Amino acid sequence: MLTTGETAKLLGVTAQTIINWMESGKLPFVRVGRGRRKILPRQIRVFVESQGLPVSGLDPGLWAKVNDEPLEHRGSGDPPLLSTNSEGTSVFWSQSARERYGWTTSDVVGKAPSVLPARVPGLPVDLLDLALPSGNETFRTLLLELQAKDGKWLATEVTVSWIYDARGGVAGTVFLLESPMPVGSSGPRR
Image (cartoon, rainbow, N blue to C red; front, side, top):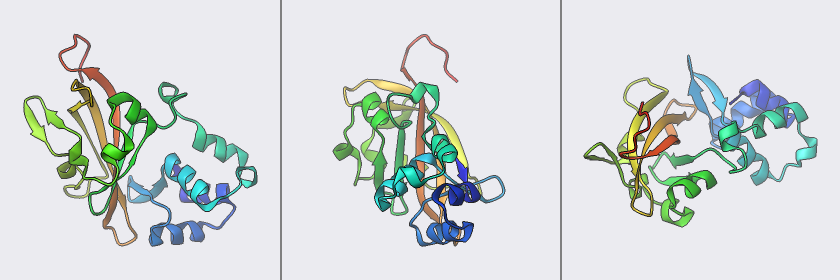
């Protein structure tokens, strides 16, 4: 994740411009730690593409940082992500999530995240319920079972993070879907 200052340097604008874009909803962000704003690399890439900004005009060191995916995700594009907006509608389903679970973008985007079958062992869970923070937390990590389109259940560590608007309201939710393992496999479970 990049700070407000790093994002400003990357895009060649002032930090106040970045804050204005955040407050207007043009550039989504996540609050971390003591409320500091951070921008996910994926959101920066989407912003650069949507604004038609030439990559050649961006700070090369920071652009490399934005494009530096963890090794386990290299070659598959983005990390396995599901993002929702403040109304609880899915707005993004990453390529690696599509590859891993088999659900297409049209299966997921534009619908409530509850279209993805999820459960804690033996008990159904609605992902939309998990999209709402309880208290002042900035993220939550859970072990859930998510069903792939082929019907197989995968034990998945899910990190839920909230994107806050300038008034402190939830503007969206990001689900990072890590460490999938077939349910019932003999591998270690966290």
